[in-house]
Structure formats: C-alpha cells, structure tokens
Length: 410
Ligand SMILES: NC(=O)c1ccc[n+]([C@@H]2O[C@H](COP(=O)([O-])OP(=O)(O)OC[C@H]3O[C@@H](n4cnc5c(N)ncnc54)[C@H](OP(=O)(O)O)[C@@H]3O)[C@@H](O)[C@H]2O)c1
Image 1 (cartoon, rainbow, N blue to C red):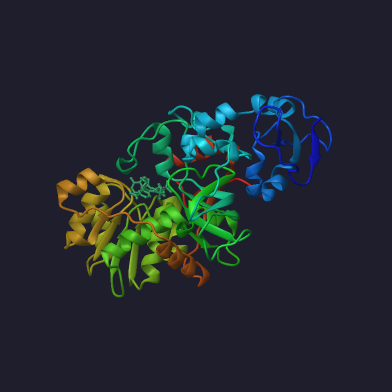
Image 2 (tube, rainbow, N blue to C red; image 1 turned 45 degrees about the vertical axis):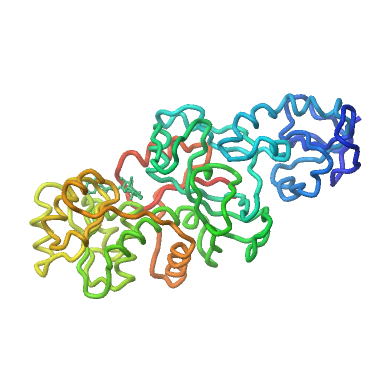
C-alpha cells in the first residue's frame, strides 16, 4: 500500500523490498495510488530525505508517498530514471546523484539542433544546488542571440562541446529555493537575478551564488530576467572603451537589447552625445533613451559627421562589418572601437577584441543604476516558456527594440 504524508516517513535501508520514498505528480490525492505515468519524480532512498525539497512540493502540487520498493518502482519506471540519466549531463548532475534529483521540471531541452521548431518543452530532472551554489525557481529567462546560435549547433570555443540534450539560456530572474553548502548572504525566498552558462530555459536553474545578485525592489520580473546578458555586454564594452564625460559615442544597432543598455550606460557615465543607429521606425525610441538617432545603411558616415562635426570619440558595433568599417572612418583611435559581432573584420581592421568577463560586481553596478533610474529596459515581448520557438523567431528577424524574454512562472 502506498501511503501519503507531509514528509517522507520511515527508514528502511535500501535493499529489495525496503521502504523508499517518492513524490508523485498532481492528480494524486492522499492515500490514492497514482496511475502509472503520472509520477513526476523518482524513488529516493530514505537516507537522502534531509534534502527533501519542500518548496518544490508546493510548486508541482505533489504528494509525498512512501511504500515498498515494489509499490513505488512503477512510478520510477513510468517516469524517468532513464531519462534523468540521459539528460543529467545537460545539468552537470553527477550520475551518482540522479536519484536525489527527485523533482521533475519543465524545460526547453534541445535533443537536436536546428531551427526554432526544435525548442520544445519536456520533463527533465531538476538540478540540485551543490556547494557554493543556489537553485532558483525561475520566473523569467532572457533570450539572446547566443541562445539561437547554440540552438543552431554552434559551440562557443570556451565550452569545448555542447551536445544535446542542452537547455539554452544564460540569464534568469527568480526566487532562491535551495541554498548549497557554504553559501552565505542568500537565503531561500530571496528574489534574485543572475547568469549561468546554459540552463535557464527551465523552471529551475542552479548557479554559483557568486553569479547572483538581489533584485532591486520594484524591478519587474521581466526586466530582471532580461537584464544580465546584454547589460553586462554593454558594460564590458563601454568600460574597455573608457567612455566618460565629454565623449561623443556612436552606438550601432542602438535600439536592440544590447544597444538599449549601451546608450543608457554611455549617458550614465557622462558621455556628452550618444549617436545611435536604427531604422526610422525606432528613432523616437532612441530619443526616449537619450540617443541622437541616425539611420543605418549607405551614407552613414556622412550623416554621423553632420550630427557630430566635433568628431566621434568612441564607437561600439552591435550590427556587423559595415558598421565596424564606418566606425573606423569616424573614430581616430581604433583602441576606442569595440565590436560585439564582427570579430574577423575587427582583426583585419586592427580593432582590439573585447575581453568578455561577466561578473556579479558588474551586474550589481547595473542593478544599482536601474534602482537610481538611470537605466530602463523596454520589453519587446514576453513569451511563455512553451513558446520559446516564437521568441527565437522574433529575435532572428534582427529588428525591433528592447528585449525579448520568456516567462516561466508567475
Ligand atoms: N559578443 C557578445 O558578447 C555579444 C553579446 C550580446 C549580443 N551580441 C550580438 O550583438 C548583436 C545585437 O544584439 P541584440 O541582442 O541587441 O540584438 P537585437 O535585440 O535583436 O537588436 C538588433 C538590432 O539591430 C538593428 N539592426 C538591424 N540591421 C541593422 C543594420 N544593418 N545596421 C545597424 N543596425 C541594424 C535593429 O534595428 P531596427 O529594428 O531599427 O532595424 C535592431 O534594433 C547580435 O548580433 C548579437 O549576436 C554579442
């Protein structure tokens, strides 16, 4: 007989027939046997019960059951010990701990690379916070061009290999629901935003506590979830450019997510004039965030010269090789040009490469600027997690203003 209870009771060793504890999905009521196929999580030996994730029970509306191995094993079989094992690598969960990964979650886990249609929702094992890490119940995840490249099969050189199944997404906002050993300064229930490498298109993400900062009071979740990636990209580029008081700065693709941060950061750091390129449709938007708009395309160099007869001191290319070449014509010192998109052209033109370095310090500085009212983030669209494919389709048009995000939970 399978029994239900608020906590995993009993203690019965781990041999055949011993009591084990499992969690089954919504749809089961206390004392009822869950129909095969509804189990959302797997058997777990009793000695692991100290880590029983009570918060997640609420999230999934689950019941904790106990029973003999024979009684509970159908749940494990019907659900996913095997799938968890197969997908564990995506979460870097050591295989030996998979049976501790008792809570299943919804995630967009790529099993193959390709077009947006490969972004489908599936049930996977939720990651568990290890030492120095926190687990966050994701409210909103940001969508970046990086994610679309991963989806198409690109491997960033520093990752070695990205093999399916892989959960995309490098930025998130949500509520801490597990705190790993040795973490100080963050508690269960803390509202945070942060960054990882992969794993954010999911109900739960694990990140080093050192990559998480508290969400500023009043920052909407959608903004928090889309804040880290492009915010940090803009911050690192403009810092390397030494943008400051008195500068005239040119930002290419200024209406996009990266451009939106770049324009406002340059202004916040004292730039006298920020000129931003965009289609005419986005000129009013550029004015609203503090840039002088200019249309991209043929004749850009002349148009910028007309707007800045004093000259352009620094330029950030978020658009492509043509924008980088225009920057080289306009800026005297090539050390004051950076590109986020045109690495090969940069090498040919003697423009220094950007040294990427995300950090919580950088993110905190951006969050503080938000709290001071110096940075806003326009949300272009918020798609539910299960519509991640639509989010990628919109992103890959290459046009639009502000940031696209995925809403994961209310
Ligand atoms: N290296 C890195 O670390 C890093 C980090 C983040 C992003 N990126 C790259 O930076 C680029 C921008 O990212 P994002 O997130 O801001 O993209 P996004 O939100 O999709 O915005 C793209 C912007 O590009 C503008 N645009 C389109 N064609 C253009 C052209 N020919 N010249 C100038 N602007 C043009 C669009 O303006 P209109 O709508 O007005 O046409 C749009 O606002 C992407 O290529 C991305 O991969 C690199």
